Length: 304
Picture 1: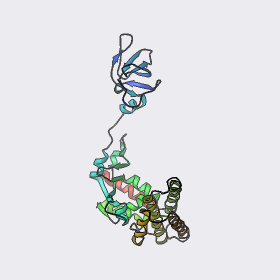
Picture 2 (picture 1 turned 180 degrees about the vertical axis):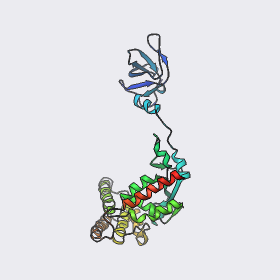
Picture 3 (picture 1 turned 90 degrees about the vertical axis):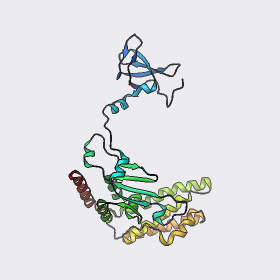
Picture 4 (picture 1 turned 90 degrees about the horizontal axis):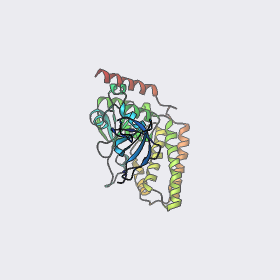
């Protein structure tokens, strides 16, 4: 009989999930600990127990020792899909449709923020910090994780807050949107510019190897630089690409030579450097304001 899944190597510490006969006429009890000593002809594992006895067991009758201990003290965590369905405070469409770069083939990508019950954090099993789903192309963050990443000027999360295509919003979600300015800071220069720079190094390697990079990715990197330029110069995040749509779509289609795209990128980096010198954005975000709001959300969850 073939062993399904990765084979456990000799020496692996395991725990018996079920009782079974040992090699001296006795019984190896459920929960007994030992090490894998070999594999039988029919695909079972030989297990040498800590007291020197031996037994055999199928893979589904064994647990890795550390996994068994985790299972023994396991507490069921809150269901992420339920949290998203019942406790989402804000959701918006992002991606090409929000950027004004959508075509007939574009997906509808939705991103949301949910608030887990405060009491859930008192348990050994914490609520998830993010949930992929439950609907297709839908991804959500628990509000604390969302605030943490947005304060670090993560472009993806800032765009969620500034998307023109709001799917759903509650009073708490409206409060979150009122805090949008508190998340904006000069940290955006490092996150936007630094990310684009690192990604273009990889794309250049693709171009040298394959003769063409992933043009859709190139387009979105240029879009990030355009967005950062507006953010640093005007102090506001604009998601829609506006008049740059046609040129960006030309990049996506591979209609612009690589050298031209590279010149555009370098020019935008220079503009960002100049914009940083006179930006109206604060050096750091208003962490205290966001933290105070998050604390109030947790308190109100208890009261509710």
